[in-house]
Length: 262
Image 1 (cartoon, rainbow, N blue to C red):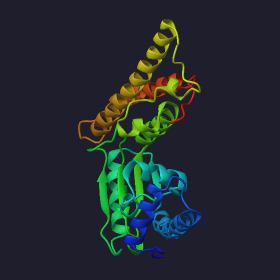
Image 2: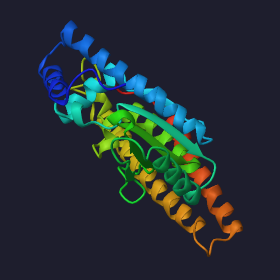
Image 3: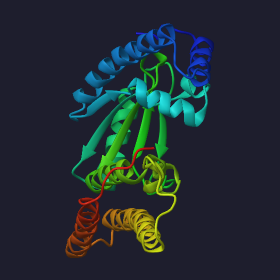
Image 4: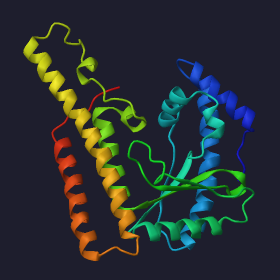
């Protein structure tokens, strides 16, 4: 199914959604119609990917997520976004299995109106996030297929939960939210001792982000080694245990934290 609007119509819709303090019912209805078009295209793309032997999860972005992204990127983003409709494949294998999966997906959509686009976030990670994204174009409509190794997925799942706790902006390199700024009323006249507690808490959040990104770099180095000719199974297992401990330590630190609003 092709989309119900032209690119220029989608751009204007995005611009109106950005400018409006409260989106109109008409624009929200148009956005829902647009998402329905993506949903139907995603369903057909899922059939192709499942026929390759994969078991992907899938989603079309919801209205709240889209409005958040529009506020960050501007109205024209809506026409050029490539992950409004997406699916995710998590593999048991490492980089070799990941590369093989990407090759299979590209070939499966080779007859589409546009050539598949590969975005290798292993070489260009975003705040530690690594995966390979394949944007395919069934009927000319972009559908993003995220292909992750098990470790990449475990890390991404942990970092998403961390972002929910200390500020979604950390996914884009922004600092954690100062959680006391969200209190109503904000503690403007807190004691020196209380301020020290706030500052120590904030430094802990910054350290957790740095630790998470460093762990992602470690995972990447280990997966590169695992895919090499020199890899030894015992070494991979030993350092794999370190990865699991690093993930467990971060989750333990997160377990007692309270989510911030932002």
